[in-house]
Amino acid sequence: MANDVGKTLEELIRVRKEKLTKIQQKKINPFPAKSCKEYLCARVHEIHTELVVSAQEICVAGRIMAQRGHGKLIFADIFDESGKLQILIKEDNLKKDFEIVKLFDLGDFVEVKGNIFITKSGEVSIEAKKIRILTKSIRPLPSKLGDIKDEEYKNRHRYLDLLLHPEVREIFKMKAKFWQTMRNFLIEKGFLEVETPVLETTTGGADASPFLTHHDALDIDVFLRISMGELWQKRLLVGGFEKTFEIGRQFRNEGISREHLQDYSQMEFYWAYANYEDSMDLVEEMYKLLAKEVFGTSKFEANGHEFDMSKKWERIDYAEALKEKLEIDILKASDKELEEKIKELKLEFKKSDSRGRMMDTLWKSIRTSYAGPAFLINHPVEVSPLAKRKEDNPKLTERYQVILAGSEIGNGYSELNDPVDQRERFEEQAKLRESGDEEAQMNDEDFVEALEYGMPPATGFGTSERMFAFLLDKPIRECVLFPLVRPKNNKSSKKSSPKGK
Image 1: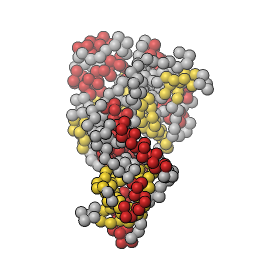
Image 2: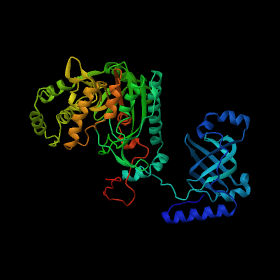
Image 3: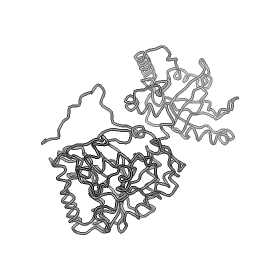
Image 4: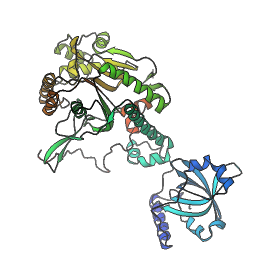
């Protein structure tokens, strides 16, 4: 194992390729298909006393990440997913094979057979009796990645970020536990996990701009779904299922921010014979469980707020909150008055903005003032095209959103199952699309037809991996294994169209 200090990257790669050739010339395969690995490094540390007493020879494997010493005696640290293990390499033990060790570099994967011993400093180690190359690395690992300030470089080389920073790997172990905990919770509550189409001829279930692509076999343009099969899961309720959920990827062709991506994971459930009050109880229970099981706490800091998931969740009335903070009654205000209030507050406004869009703009201007945890309730029908109207006030809907630290981290409602009302709302949304609102929902006649056969009263809810990133108080891109980056040397913004466009 040689010292790489002072050499250029090109020189290092050239030297490593020469070593690779020498290994191959010795009739040794530098990329074998299998290893005899028996134990993770961490497991060796756990049971080393037992292994020392039994004098058992064991086989471990991992990547060489450090070395000390030279000549006839070398100490090296190998790493696997569980941690590190020190290896002692003696020329006397390996004889002729010791020459192969000289061709090893930091970053190489090796397999080691030997016995456990404890060094004078108390470190658990293996004295190598046999050592074999498993993968010869051609490109040297950087000594540090944390010092690199170019986030795009880090995202492009996420595998190096993961390799050099154990704390980054821990994020994704936690994320896997986050989804599994949610999945187990819903299954224990009697929900059936389902899969619905990713490609759709009509998008539905959200106000969002979709990705468009072309289906060659059918010669039609299709969209990537913008919700986790909302209108499909409701069809399942028509078909006789009563509790369903899906966890999967969905796509929205919108902007990138600390909390938003275009390609991300979402969970949605649908529950027949229950309403939004039942759903809120279930969601509060689920969120508290996720906090405890995944994060080990109920107290969080995010967006400059502190909040405690274990406390009783308050309820915020949509219209009353706006009346209190902005002195406007959105239920009585005319469209002109809504527009004037938006301009007064210097908020973003487009002439094509619908009444519902203006209400949403005003709400988002005050949202950051609420620490939560809370449920935002009593949404106007204009901002809730798929939610059931309240019986005592048809201007409002049986909808709720989870509010944490000034942000919406989940959305649910009593589902609209009146086909006449649904058709009218779809037609209104279609008019908004025609007037330039690309995020307005499409008119899905097939879904309305399904409702005409009858869908039981039901509630639904959805939340995304944004919740996980939010509770960690990290940008969502840091919580995605491989966020999208531009191809190297490609700065073009030229758009290509699907066939037929």
